[in-house]
Figure 1 (cartoon, helix red, strand yellow):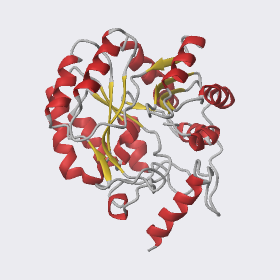
Figure 2 (cartoon, rainbow, N blue to C red):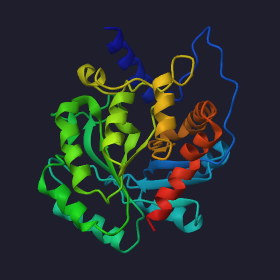
Figure 3 (cartoon, one colour):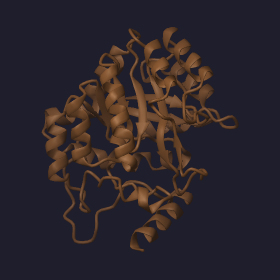
Figure 4 (spheres, rainbow, N blue to C red):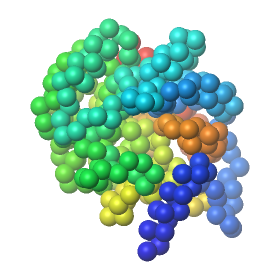
Length: 321
């Protein structure tokens, strides 16, 4: 019951545009440190008309570079807005393939052709988020299946990856861990079958530290963003799915949990700071989210913080060209 109430409250806050970085609980001693080095936001996305919002948010938060892709919805496609950002601010943005919301069960032939054409022409430096496993969110579309699902074991995924061989473009494969027994074996096979393909795992699947360790230890071609791991994800519409997700990387006082601190230090070269700012409510809270991450990064050894905050993304996206 308490968890369900938390889900409802979370949905209301999202709808009001008030949800942002978590606040420290009463009685907590706030961590005074702050990472003031450069930041490369390794994952962000926009719909139409949000270009000026992006520039303003980055400037105010002190974010130097960003990997960005469009949310390609028919009525609100951000493709033109992303292209305008890249055109007017060369060197500030790295552009990815637009995110499709139409793929189900298997990747369609048209989607595969569009992705390969854009990557081969060097129009795009990486493949923006493909929604393989995406549970319905309390503040978003509700589907009859309770999730958007593209089976990575179907032929389309391998056709896409075969076509990407030698192109050097990272691919963002979004899958959430709420059905670990179904999805991890599938991705275990895919990662192993394409060892030269770099896969970006957004939000580390909202997984636990042991789950992320399992994936990273098994596959050196996988990197993960830490976006949205500053708070436990309570946005899944189904309580059963939500309960399968991992905890936040910080405790209620904003202190890095010991298991996450150890994991981040161990895999310092394969983890990325990112916000996954997307809709307007997330962009409105961009500064708060970045400020939270500056406090988190300050709890790491300085050289590790520098890797997570900027250097890893700089290497990753530079190699894509």
